[in-house]
Each structure stands twice: as C-alpha cells, then as structure tokens.
Length: 199
Image 1 (cartoon, rainbow, N blue to C red):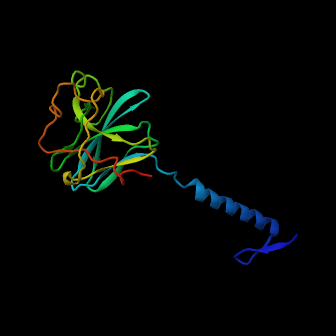
Image 2: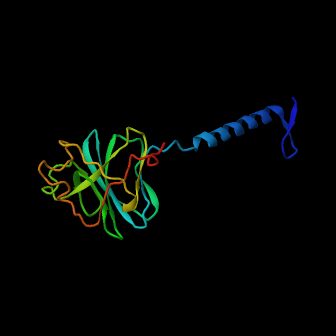
C-alpha cells in the first residue's frame, strides 16, 4: 500500500488521504451551497426619511383580502414586510410619519386599527369596529420580490387615482379624498419607478 504525506508531515495510507480529501471536498460544497441563502423574494419597505414611520399593508390572497399592521421603521432603514414569493400582483400600503405628522395614503380603502392587527376582509370596516383607511396601490408587475421606498414629500411622484368601479375605490359621487385628512398628507411614493424594485 502506498503512503501519502499530510500537511503535518505524517505518513498516511493513500486510501485514507483520498477519503479525507473527498470528505473535505464534500464538506466544502455543503458549506458553500448548503448555507448560502437563496435570492430574497420578499415585499420590502424602506423608510428613507428622517422620521420614524408606521406601516400597514393590504393584499388579496386565495383566502380573500387581508390587512396587517403595524411595522415600525426607524429613520433610514428597510424592513421585510412579507417574506417569500409574492402571492399577488397588487399590494396596498398606508404609512404614517410618527415624528412630523403626515401620511402616505391613497384611494384604496381597507380596514385598520390603532394597535397591531391582522384583519380579514375590507367591507364594513366601521361597522366591524375598525378604522377605514386609504391605502396607495403598488403594482409589482408580478415580480417575485419588490421594494417600496418612502421618501420626503418633495421627492414623491404624483399619485394615480384608482379606476372607477374598483372595489377599493371610494363610493361613486364621493369627493376624491373627502374622508381623508388633508393636513400633512403626503402623496403615494412611486413604487413602480425604476430603482424601487428588487431584481
């Protein structure tokens, strides 16, 4: 039987050296691929303001409409709001500036409340004891992952109204934005603008 010399200078049988090498190679492959994280496929939100921000999200999945909140994002941070592949093309976001007032809102009305919540359904919010809040729409274009950037109001793109007849839009005949407070309101961020999407 032939011998091999290991790094410490000890003679080992060649069969042992080959087996040790294969084990080391297999361990290296495991560490390289087994511990590597797959590409993130999440819905993320970044607070690019100088304020603390509270965030609520709405979406429709196979069980119907759901709204969830609150995620509290410190200034200049990002957080994963929903983990995993996105289940819908459209998501809805409402955010409030805790430090300076104002909010990021839209014309898609969903149910919220002041404390942490998960609410199923978007109908009859007030009758069910919830608040009725206007969310802005985020069109992910059916991407697996998406990031929304909240910025100061001077950096925002104009908000697009929802089409007439959309289940989330205000009732016909209602003045646009009438139930929403006007003071300190911020337009929705350009969630579908270049650079706001993870690829």
